[in-house]
Length: 189
Image (cartoon, rainbow, N blue to C red):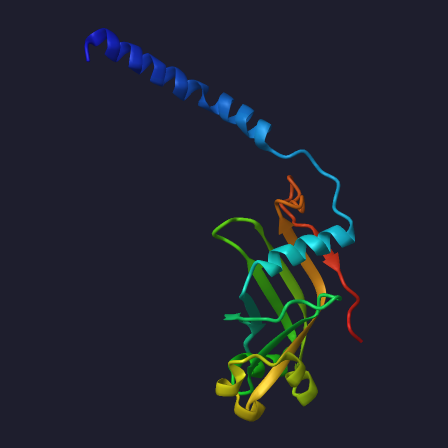
């Protein structure tokens, strides 16, 4: 590179450095979403179901005796019409101990590989050892893991709140606060 080309490249670099703050603001302004109308409840639930249906697993968050969040991966059943979610587990797990002392739980569904969005369902968990419910929901691997339904318990999560971010359905966060669209559910009595 000769001196003239060097100075030309240096000058371009200096101009670019000086102009970067200006152009970055323009670029940011062009990419920041305008406020959008929130989705109605049925559309938001449909957006949540789409994210959930694309996932085999979800994260289940409970609280230990000291109030610290504890997380694990679970294979839940698809949500029911009212968005109640059922999960099967062993009676000897820590999550069951946690839920016995604090029934507050969060289920988190996300597809991070494709960045489609996420769903967080916060609610109350109930431990259900009803044999009819177990038969209704039976999975093939239970014959080995829970022969005769031994040590099996179902966790019924009744939703109280659901946050939904689904880019393809237009369930988008608020551009100012980043708050995701949220639904409230009737709290169980």
